[in-house]
Image (cartoon, rainbow, N blue to C red; front, side, top):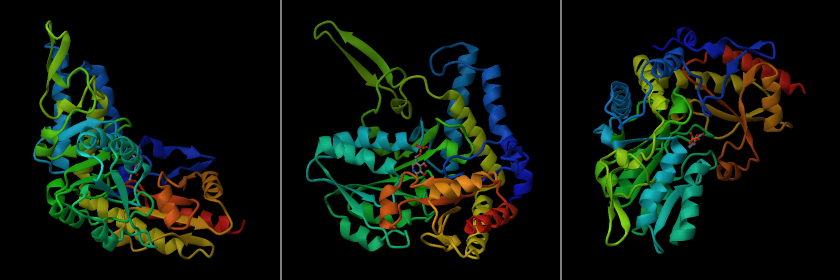
Length: 411
Ligand SMILES: Cc1ncc(COP(=O)(O)O)c(C=O)c1O
């Protein structure tokens, strides 16, 4: 079992007081706090072996390259990819989706094709497809969401056809916490010869993910939502799909050689091997080192333990919040189908008012539409407040939060 009280000792920031109250951090879906093991790994990297990777023959560069490659290996094992060649490091989920859109979509989508996207997506899985459709002329079709925020599988079955070239969906909604049946969606998509891109920003940090078992073609996630620093994340791609793809960015590291032809007066290049073909320029090396430390930290705890802990917290919070007269939880309430996230509102108050009031008691929650405006429209909401939990949260923090909610109700 996971012991949050012991885990909390690894997170220096949790000792802070905000507005004279002990900090209660309920915004981990936006970004998680960082344990001292991750901070120490980054510090150690800069103090002892900082050098650029894959460029020089000197010792520091060798050490740094080895660390950076180890980080790819660690991430590959964590999500059960076949090898590190299927793991591309980039800035995060947003960049992962843009890479698929521009390195795959730009060359494979045209008029008459369709891209299926669900209405519960984060803007980062909507906007790149809408942008690309303007230049490539394909259609973006939306899969419906039910009134409780769950995915409407019937709408998906009706929308998919031989015109569908890729299905883009989130593993877990960042608004409701609802977990999609990605494996089933991938099976149906493949029966129609469509690829599947999964936004794993809210799943990899919270429960075991096995990309081979899910049988998806692309899977992107962000390090900063799983204890690692900001500016580092990963895209998993099936080797055979990545091999066929054009690069995303051009520059150093992604090519083997560039030669100048004196006849044509042009340069031509040969592409590097996977995954470097997609990692142009100097990468975020210290971010990779931090991500490796974060993955090791989570592996030591055990991802099944993380899942059970969050389920317990969600169940406890849902029950306690329902005791409040003016608090309304939006969408599905069954904690076993969700992942550590509860969107809610307080009658008569805007979500920002609720968040500001909670902040005055040291409680950090998100407010607004969480970069998922179409889903809010579907749920007939202008905005929502959102609590999201992680390994360092406790039932006592939830009880304190409910106590403050009761005060808000008196406003
Ligand atoms: C479901 C989901 N997808 C994508 C993103 C974008 O992640 P990032 O900003 O790290 O690229 C987020 C961030 O909140 C998210 O929750």
